[in-house]
Amino acid sequence: MVAKNGKSNLTTRPKSKTENVGAKEVKISPNYDAPFGSFYSNYASISHTRSELCVDFGIVSPPHKVDLEKQIAYAPVIVRVIIPPQLVDGLIGALKDQVEKQRAEEKDGVFSLSGGVREDRSKKS
Image (cartoon, rainbow, N blue to C red; front, top):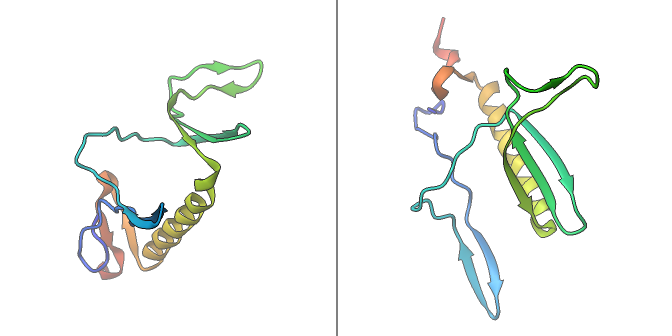
C-alpha cells in the first residue's frame, strides 16, 4: 500500500504494549522474525464460553456446502482465534482505531486497487 504521502504502509505493525511484571514494567512488542501463517477471510463468527471469546474466520465462496432445506451455506473455518476476556476491550478499541484510519484514507481520495496497491485519486482528472 502507498499512502497519500507516497510512503508505503503495507505492513502496519501493532503498537508496543507495556505491562507490569512484578515490580518492573516490561514493554511487549510483536516479533515477526519467526514464520507465521497469514489467512484471508471474508466471514467471521463470534461465540464465547464462560472464560473466552472465540472468533472463527472463514471463506464464503463457491463451491461450498449448501443446505437448501435449511437455507444455509456452510463456510469452511480457516482459523479460530481464542481471546481471554482481559484483551477484548483493547481489541475492540484497536479495531475501531484502524477502521477510522482506513475510512479517513478513503475520504482523502485514497482507494484500493486490485493487488493491494494504493493510489491517490485526487491527482487524477
